[in-house]
Amino acid sequence: MRARMLTFTRQDSPVHRLNGAAKLIIFILWSVSAMITYDTRCLLAMLLLSLAAFRMSRVKFGDYAVVLYVILLFLVLNQMAIFVFSPLEGTRIYGTRHELVHLAGRYTVTAEQLFYQLNVALKYAVVIPLAILFLLTTDPGEFAASLNRIGVNYKIAYAVSLALRYIPDIQRDYEQISFSAQARGIDISRREKLPKRIKNMISILTPLILSSIERIERISAAMELRGFGTGRRRTWFRSKPFTFGDWVAVGSVCAIVAVSAVITFYDGSRFYSIF
Amino acid sequence: MARRNGLSIITIVAIGIGSALFVILGRFGSIPSGIPNTSIETTYALLALFSLLYGPVAGLLIGLIGHTLKDAFFYGSPWFSWVISSGLVGLIIGLAASRISIADGNFGRKEIITFNVAQVAANAIAWFAVAPVLDILIYAEPADKVFTQGLVAGAANMVTVGVIGTLLAAAFAKTRTKQGSLRKLN
Image 1 (tube, chains in turn brown, green):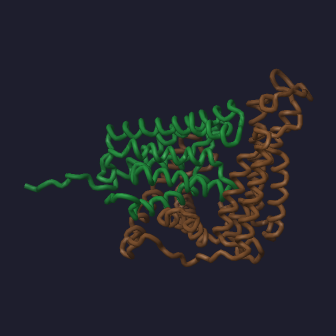
Image 2 (cartoon, one colour; image 1 turned 180 degrees about the horizontal axis):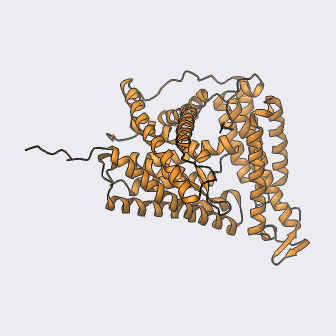
Image 3 (cartoon, chains in turn orange, red; image 1 turned 135 degrees about the vertical axis):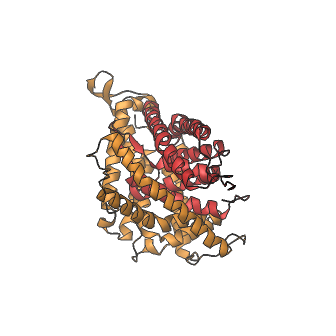
């Protein structure tokens, strides 16, 4: 049950050296931009740029391999679901119909549908490299400071930092409770029938959640005693100042996003058509 | 559990720990139900319980932060339409169940009914309406697909919260001392 998740790894590269707040701003701008545009040219250009950034970071394949497989599986399932539920979505969007192969009933493969689904796939592909990169190269401690810097209330930033701090602890608690339950014959694997499995799950959740509630009371008492929340602002141990490189990176991403928005909406529609 | 105006310390800590629990249960605590692509997400029982305990603001932020972190760590990028819907579930349950004083150990038949009406309403609004509409607006996905996904997920979450959430809340209430439970001897 080892966690296969994206965690920060300490390395040295231009991407690792960027300020956490700069990376957060870049990631948000990039995701919003990829969300808005359905313009294939913009998406392709953005994909190339994000792959270039990925290469520059020199992160190791092993650090993200499992997550990448999960993402690809999800992508394939999503593509199949789109076709099953709406085989003519592309025709509806682009307004033309070039039939390629007729399968059965209402299922016809059209060039428009293939093009639409290519765009959907590209939209994911554009965000994924930067998302993985952001998680692998940003120190969780610096992340909370970055959130505060871009204008999030410091109390909420602190809540996020608490979450990041306690994810490994709670995972360990969960594993210990579930192992000790299994040692007593409480099985939550697929060998057990569904109602029994749910019942067994509850007997793991109850101690986990009750102990977490106690933990909440303990931590908040400790914070209360240290006077958390009395000041209007707070400083962060991990906070770094913006350097020239950070401004250049944020500036160029702003420019890319602006260009992409102009190209996308130049003809009045968010969809770019080749038909 | 003293509640203050604004974000009290206990709410902040509850948001942090609640989000961490949301991530872990979202990853390890889901049971496939046998119906393809549908699973029993125990993490929504947790979200409902924490919204009940710590109020609407905590519910909203646990949904938003927990779901964003879960998606980010395990799937690479957050799926914002569903992240927003998770936040909404927490917010609505927190608002609708604010009259239940579970911290005093009150979780009888009346409270169970209130809690479940709140959770069914919250899940219906979030998964039958908001999530699919946002999917269409943000990601331009086919309407049939997203509404079917929303229906299935919403129904599964209602059952999960109804069964597991209610049981967890009852278990928590038992650990609390009821108000006025002291009796005078002689």
